[in-house]
Length: 198
Ligand SMILES: Nc1nc2c(c(=O)[nH]1)N[C@H]1C(S)=C(S)[C@@H](COP(=O)(O)O)O[C@H]1N2
Ligand SMILES: [Mo]
Image 1: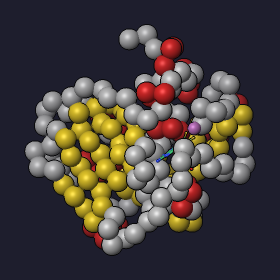
Image 2 (image 1 turned 90 degrees about the vertical axis):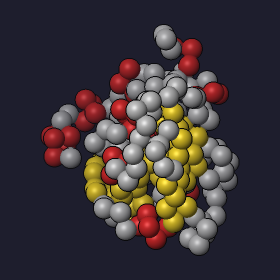
Image 3 (image 1 turned 90 degrees about the horizontal axis):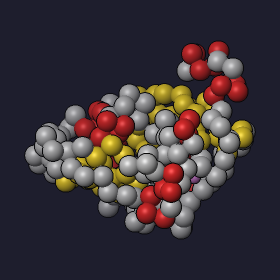
C-alpha cells in the first residue's frame, strides 16, 4: 500500500526477521490435489445455519485486492505481496453468527488447522486469496484458496482452506498445539507458546 511504500523498510521488518525476495514454500506435509468437482468451503459451528459453497459459488463472491507483508516465524519476511480474493468479512456476511461466537478455527485439506479470535479474523486486511502478485497461486502456495492474515505470523495464513468453524472458546490449531504461540503477533515476537502470559 502507498502508506507502506513510503515507510522506511526497516520499520516494516519485525524484530528478528530478515527479508527475502523469492517466495519460499513452507508446508508441513504434501500439497493436496485440487478437484473442483468435489471442493467445497464450509462455514459451521456457532452459526444460525451452516453453509456450504461449492467451487463455482465461492468464485463468484465479491473480489478484493490488498498489498501486505508476510512474516514467517522461521525468520523470513517478504514485503509487498499483492493478494486477490475474498475478504473474510465478506465471507462472514453470508451467514448469521450466534452471539456466542468469539473465535474461529480454519480447516484445511490434509488436516492443518489454525486459530484466530473472531475480531482478528474480521479485520479489514484478512482475505481468502486465490491470486498473488498477479498470478494464480501455485499449488504449493495454497491453490485454490488460502487465508492471508498480514498482522500475524504466516503460520496463521492457512493454505488449501476448506472451511471456517466458529467457536465460543479459543481452540489451538496445528502449530499452536506444537509449541507456537496462540496469538502470533510478529511485532511482539510472539513466537512460542512458552511466552504466553494468559
Ligand atoms: N495448510 C497449511 N497451511 C499452511 C502451512 C501448512 O503447512 N499447511 N504452513 C504455514 C506456514 S508455517 C507458513 S510460513 C506459510 C507459508 O506459506 P508459503 O508456503 O506460501 O510461503 O503457510 C502457512 N500455512
Ligand atoms: Mo511459517
